[in-house]
Image 1 (cartoon, rainbow, N blue to C red):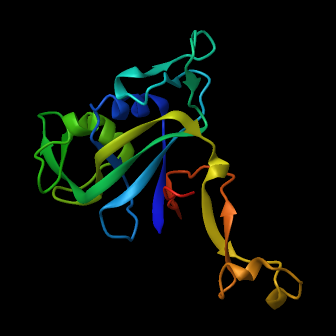
Image 2 (image 1 turned 120 degrees about the horizontal axis):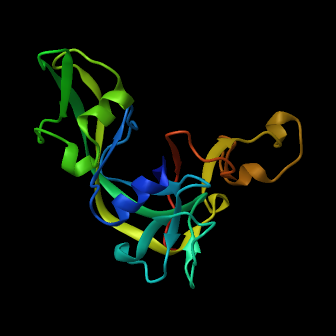
Length: 209
């Protein structure tokens, strides 16, 4: 079953884990129906690092400089998958353009939210920097709603996740292999080696894996 992996900066990972950030904004959305599972990849950073301190509790999740932090039994989550959530709905983000007396400002909203500041922990200026300027009422992106959040006791490595690719070493390619025993269309699971730039489809991990 398809799932999504999102690359998220450490400071936003902290706000998601604390429950303060309940909407993730993106310029695009996957072409699969909600609800679906999203895995949180915490991006690497020498300045701000995610520190997961046992117990899987959102209250024990911190953003800090790992070079000066005393881990004290916890683990650094940078460059790892630190948790997962269910995206239970995706709404289109539009903007309201208004004149402030000097120039134009923008308020970003969805069908259910007059403003997204609290749920995204982003100011309208932040979203303007991300989405760019827009005309009044123009759709600019998507609000991914976060539910059923789970922060792992131990972050997972990228290689524990896989994507499906066309096999290049089977009989149909002129080589002897048993790879196609996985799929009659020569599509085989391949471990993930690079994080997504924004998000990407991956194979969902099941409980028996």
